[in-house]
Length: 255
Length: 255
Image (tube, rainbow over all chains, first blue to last red):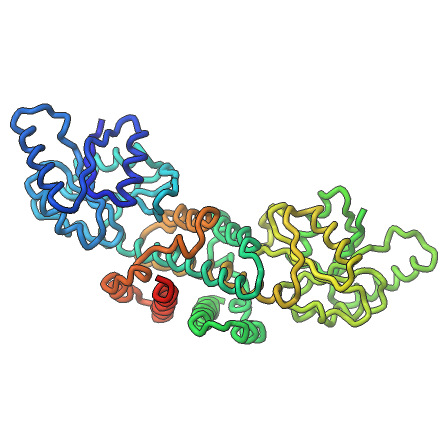
């Protein structure tokens, strides 16, 4: 049994609580708010246990699931702990955790929304630790909830997070622009959903380089001009222009 | 039985042949290349049949599945036909078809790739016709292969096609940028695939406006600056900047 204490009560923490509670060999022994003095109080309790009280309250791993900005401050309070301390962020280095502790990272690469269930089995867990034994425990914890656990350095994780901003945040915003175009012209956005699904699913069989179609790839200037005329929102026009330029460059160089 | 003649032999034509061949009440009686004089020859044959030869070779509908540029030229050859003539394009008006014919549009809104199977049942078919009886036949043809058939005007279809360029072409290119970032940093692109899938699937439960997350929405300038520094490709940097601006504007106005 791997005993876990979650620090932070946000969306990632909630999702981890849920999945751990259904996982046989993992036990969440405590969820502590990172705000106010909840963490300090809990640590005092825990240090009493160190001096002979029941082991039950002692975790193997502290998972600090707080916002990026708060990781450093919150984890400092755990500086005296002898347990593994990990954060769950894609863009923060392992070095944000205090010196001298058994530090690590446990980053589930997924976009979590409050109240929306996710299937952890399919979520890649990116782990990092300085020492082999700590890495092994994180590997075990990761494998208990997911089928894909990757060892990823802080540098690689930073790139992954940047790529994730593109494929998640930017893609979602592009859906939003598509929805606005539909709304302006009284067409139901639902008509586009099968296309959106297929665009994503196609990646299982084709690389995005192979899957690319459309006026920008064909360098079909007539259609591009017509589209730009149709767009009323100035920023959406700029989005269209720069993505068209980027596609043209990609295929201009490679064909 | 609805009898169909397909004009054109490209990807859309191939996919339609496949699905019609499995559909009980539809028969593809001929597939004619739009190039050279194949169509003229076929039409001569067909006009002989008009004069008393067996009806078998006469379609109810000509589906002109050719590139946008070729629709006008190719369909002109059918000007004397008394059958319904439709094109399959998202961005071309119904008026590109010759005057005086029973014209219409049969536009399956999906991104077709050669060799990749699609499930037509889930593909929205956008139909248009000038006369009710022609529309009804297109409706029947659409419903025989798909669960969603929409009557969409040329003007609406133009917007749909523009929105489709965003959610398909641009999204796919964003995947491509994500893949390049991974490659540069020796991280497998596969790690991002569950995130890509979830970003698309989330639309079943949340609108893109609700689903948006990330540094641009949070106006987290520190992360945005770090990301821009990480990007080596100048055009990818511009894509990042303009999409970040667009997200900021969307939430700046509405929050």
